Image (cartoon, rainbow, N blue to C red; front, side):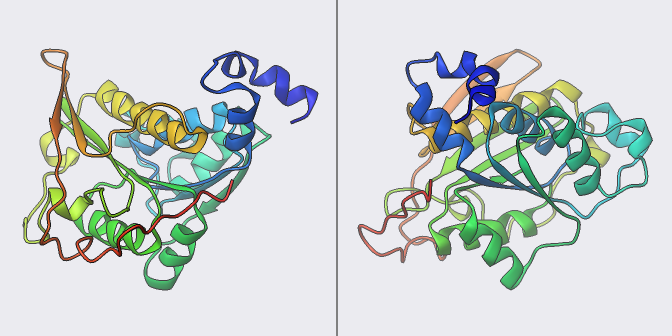
Amino acid sequence: MNKQQQTQYSRQIKLPQIGAQGQQRLLDARVLIIGMGGLGSPAAMYLAAAGVGRLVISDFDRVEPSNLQRQIVHRTADIGDTKAQSAARTLAALNSDVNITAVDWQLDDDDLDEQVCRADVVLDCSDNFPTRFALNRTCVQNATPLVSGAAIRMEGQVTTFLSNEHSPCYRCLYREESGEYETCAAEGILAPVVGVIGTLQAVEAIKILASVGDTLCGRLLLFDAASLVFQTIKLSKDPACPVCSSIPKSRERSLKI
């Protein structure tokens, strides 16, 4: 860590839970974020500002006027551009110290597997079940920690899956036969709600990378903006889960940082 970095991240380094060692772990880390919408925007901005060294941001959608109400990584001038490229410009302006890779095509199969395998933590900031299930399976197969967030109307939720023998996975929470899913376009969304959930995803990622505190693994955090109440419920591993029940005992993946 050079002198400029010591100054830039000084407020974070002062935290006894982080310190110089924790900050160096962030600088050496690689995070994959799927989705540069309402959740991915604040998550990516806070991770970039916190000094996560390498961010891979994936989104092949294009910026539309209706996105600007809540997707704060994009600007009016970005309308029509891909969200990945638009977000990359904002993040680079926020912290030029961060290495940013913009993926403006859909990651699937081998591409997705490669990116998940190389990441120390993955953030699911997508907005549909097929993507979430595919990402969950790939994270379980690669033993990569996954931080999952979702929000709609005035409600949100966030949890962490550590992809080990004790951790549940996204398939333990939702069945793939769940059917149609609700969308913000159809149901509406209060802008700051995605900010709250996306920010919490960034907090979880930083904690994993810096080995700080307890994660939400095994717990689902629910947020109700209408009553301004947080609620935590236990999330148990499904012993019959077709995705994670066959994880070998004592399998662990060490972060590469």
